[in-house]
Length: 149
Image 1 (tube, rainbow, N blue to C red):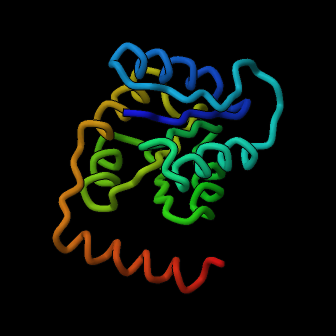
Image 2 (image 1 turned 30 degrees about the vertical axis):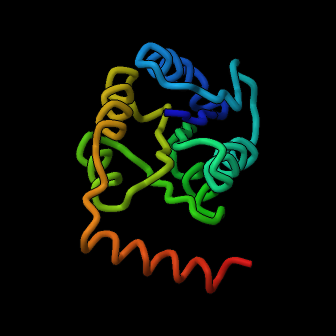
């Protein structure tokens, strides 16, 4: 699986651990920054990942900032992106099973490394359930078509 990964200064350290985990589990990682603690604006990096997902250049995206919130808000501005702030194993699983989230946003200041890696593992292993959930995603896609230019 090809996964785009990016972080801001609030999540760069956690991003490195996630990248290492993904590579060890045979995923192809597209690293879109950053690699050191330099102050940057999270929308710039969320947009890089979301654009890759929206254009179908990668299968999934993972974003890390201080809380995950700003990254998810930005990523959801891109057509076809379903970004979820994930804080625990339950929300990781549900974001995929019910919402088919193609991007997750994690909080580098709220999650410990082992928690974040378990969240990523759980999200990657979860399967979209379809059925009534697909009907809801169809409604979301319709809203997106009507409101995005």
